[in-house]
Length: 405
Image (cartoon, rainbow, N blue to C red; front, top):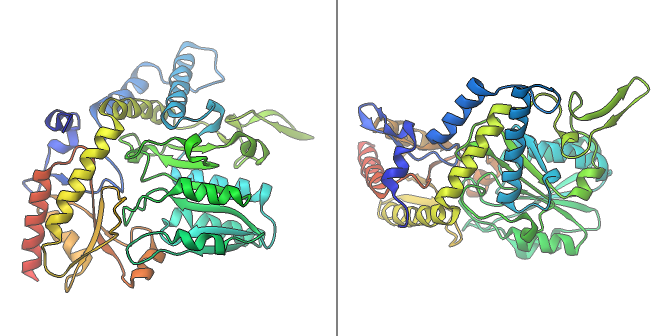
């Protein structure tokens, strides 16, 4: 390992506490990550030193807040290698980013009878917005299936495409299976057929090096709170020529150029899609999170998370009756599993008594649960601040819990 895990863990105050008199083992990172002190300090500084509403005021506090807010936009642009800052839109999170595209792209480009291809492994946030749009526009949702190993059946994609297909919506990394999808290949197939692609990067942005130009993504969405930043902040990247043709998602302040009762003209990108007062302090603190992640090194973090994934998988597979869902080689640090004869909720509840935080349930992926004919799973998900010693504690506790049943 090429970074100091003990020093890193000291950067996260919440990891120092005990739960039920046991050291906290936090394995719910796919739901949300914890925040380093640097991010907490950035939030505090914003509120205590230079909080003001951005862009329009002419006083010192607003100017400083605007500068810090727009600096984060530039940091995001560099992080994902977008061509211009105008392509970076701040939202409340991945969910709002996808809803924005579903509404605005739908209004501009979708006609009755058109089709949207959505994969079977998607989070509800990348299914329901398209269903709402389809209902509004008279369009149709087409499912791209997975196999029992948790692999997208890319070989079936071409046969699902018709002359009415307008967009493919696919996750970069599955929040349940950990599968890393070949989104660059999917984008190539889409574009060779004149189709646009939206990539849900919520589970990828903190774990993979993202280059939206190399991927040739038309839209890419992700959230700050899964990247060691504040909640309530998200990003939508979009190709400029598409964003310029799409109508605003919401109306209000900031997104306008001039308002008259005879008609309104809209602001330039990216502000056309940023109506109202945004999460100013959250966006500024997100900049601190990006800086911290870059200091650690995304490649370094990913290498350690993969080591943790392999270590945990090897141990879990020794437990009789335990099945892991998602067995692809190209996989992020997520393990979803069930144990024969024990309900997933009971496992999660009992593990909590050992100070171990995991996620249980359907993980907002009902179609995926239906594919495997299950109601839910236990999910353990790793971040670069986790350790092999924590995995040992987790596996030992899991064995004790199973023995109780």
